[in-house]
Image 1 (tube, helix red, strand yellow):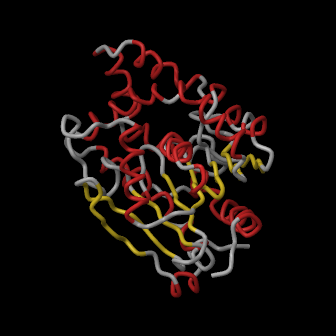
Image 2 (cartoon, helix red, strand yellow):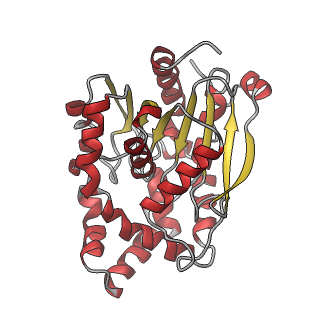
Image 3 (cartoon, one colour):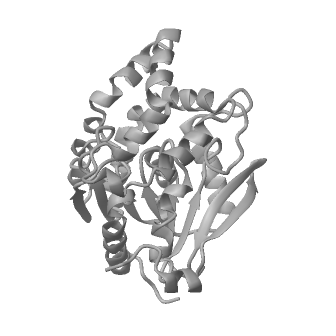
Length: 302
């Protein structure tokens, strides 16, 4: 079994913490592993950052090249104000595409989680020849995955009123809401480190950041109309796909995982008995599944 944070991996390929300028923005990213090995780009969700991959990276860095960016407005990347940067999924995907180009990555697998799915699938549709495989962890591409949690957000898409804005600000951007994202649906809350929600909430509380998040809540409405195009990409290009899904996730429930099997022939679906941030409770399982999957589908001589 893979042990997250295995010392020999960390010693040979320590995780590096880097910053590169992209489109006038400082983009922070984590990187580890041999540069000539197959690359896995790790795309984080809300409200976190590349911090969510802090244990997965050393677990796989002996054999794979892993890079995990922070989007603008998240983690340690630049955070221009909401009136200074176009906080849309289109624009974030463009910045990430430019970041990939600056790193000189021409072939890669995409790990997509939560917000990482609409970012990653925009990139995949634009450059299908570059995508060697997909790892999907609670990343939605089907209407079935937008259930009860999304009702107030859908109301916000329909009417961006002060009342609907306040509902989201008061219920999705507080420390209790952030903690809930990490603990809801897990088997044992005591194994989930409180550092997670404390770290994320500290960044959410930066002046202007909640306005950024509200803008992205609103722009998430741009994603469902793109689902048919993403599904067409799956059917046409058939990227080998590993799905590792926390089945108790209330945000993106397991109903959103099954439809991938309708469009993808080479797909492996694993429903894990945990919640939204599955890496926190089942990181070792996910690392092992990824290692086996990537060895079979993308490993090449270095």
